Image (tube, rainbow over all chains, first blue to last red; front, side):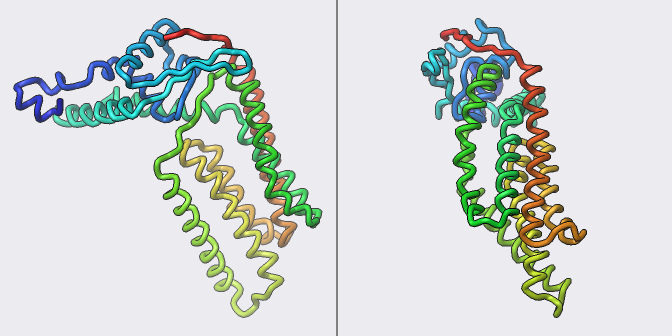
Length: 107
Length: 209
């Protein structure tokens, strides 16, 4: 829902914010993935500073929302879990950024 | 606003993390040293220098696969949307450099200009400026100061080496390539050793989401 339609419906603008993206750990994952075509689990672990279990559960949530795509492959007999931002994920992140900018500007 | 700044910072930090290992500097150094040596020998083999990037690419990939990915993880940098625009801009900048240096050359040397001065001063200056475009683009994309330094070394080296009378013409280009390549290689090696020492291996981590 856009901010204007949220206002028209009498809602607070923050209510139209995508909660799935707004959560700091998931926002960090999406931000890291935004600059890359794909990144593996270890890279995300290093860049976000999350614990393995935490990262794993947030990835699962983002995957079920179809914001990211997860593929598994073997490289030199070592398993690699690759995450990639989907077009939906990209647009969710950019609209979140726009909404937050507008909201914070008006504060 | 802080959370938005944090996301931008995270994106840039992640991008910079892929350039922390010094492998690009090592490869550039090897490329320039070999290119400079071939040029200095004035052998027709110098034309093979154009194939060097293809020869060094597998070496870079091997180093990354063996030493970098087990430590930092694998990430493939996304191609920028405006890649075609970037190439066009680079071509325009290269042309502007060529015309600009030609203008300065004519203005400075007036009627004294001749083919010998053209070769001794103009060619190394243009060569240096053109070679600076690549490092400058990397520096700008990753916001890394060391690549700006490399670009400036190229730009000034091409002008300074003939002007100071150290070398002229093709020899100046060769010398500049060897000096800048040597510096790049040594700096890259230092970065690589530091990277290996500071970053422990984290391979075989696999958690299914």
